[in-house]
Image 1 (cartoon, rainbow, N blue to C red):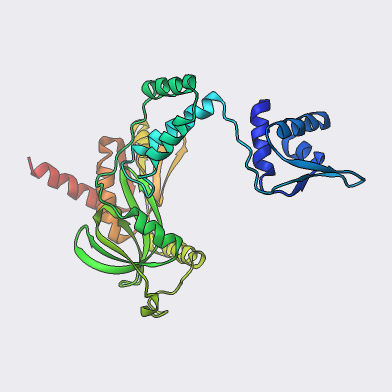
Image 2 (image 1 turned 90 degrees about the vertical axis):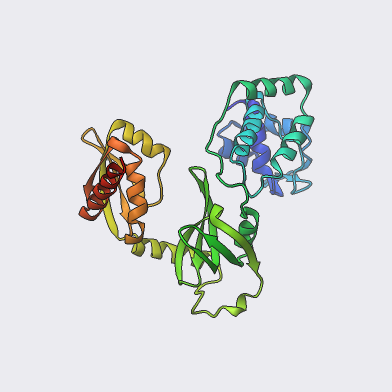
Amino acid sequence: MKKSERLNQELIYLNGKKSFNIRDLMVEFNISKRTAIRDIQELEYMGLSLYTETGRYGKYNIVSDNILTPIHFNTEEIASIFFAIKAIENLSQTPFDKTYNQIYQKLFAILPENKKDMVDRILDSVKYNSVPTITKELYLRTILNAILNEQLLSIEYAQNNHFETSLYPLNIFFQNGIWFMNGYDIGSKNWKIFRCDCILNCEILTEIMAFSNDLLPFYNRTEAKNNLSIHNNRFHNIEFKCELTKYGKELFLKRNFYEMRLEEYDGKYFLVGNYNDEQLEYLTQYLISFGKQVKILYPDELISKYKLEILEMLNSY
């Protein structure tokens, strides 16, 4: 580790501490006593305020346990920060989408001119193309606030059918251009995955006492996570296995979902996982997207559904 990188890591390590001794730095960063003493002197030059306490149990006391000394970044680190901001912007929408441009402008403004030119040239030379969100009118911030404050949501939803329900949101995740939400549907008393772009309206419910304990068996994230884990183990009760070509493996790595994994043995690639009867149609369409790069090995139910879909496609010509 370079000296500048080590000093930054030492600042981060000391943040929040009231005191430390030379031995702490020696063990944490695998450095000699001599190097640790030099580093402490460098940290003082960088603005770390401390005073020594001599004696058998001597130590360095930090004047403030909230270190505000500047963290120094090298050229590659600066470039990676701006690149990361631009890459996230390509999602089109996140719970924090309105702040990315502000962060970019603030960071860019404090750079010296030569660093600004470097960032401009790198961003012009390296491109990151991700799948953008399909629909821009999402309720990600509202959903996230409900998750963080452990509140219930009332949503109007329209995917295969149109309905309204109340739910306990656990988390949101982005996959293949779509934002999803894991939530406990109070109406059906079951866990479901909701597409955020199919939510027509979303509001936080403040009166949670309107729901009795038999409708919502938990009010905290720890219990909710355990409940979801139990549900997933019971719900995805049908095993499936497919053989993939080399290109099929690449397609899977680009686009895969929950309860799926890749296995490799005897020079072959296999897509294995679990599903539920309710997910048969969705899984079939997913496997059809692999074309001739996939062969379903079992179960027979999935093979039959796959063949039927192919025949329907052929009959349309």
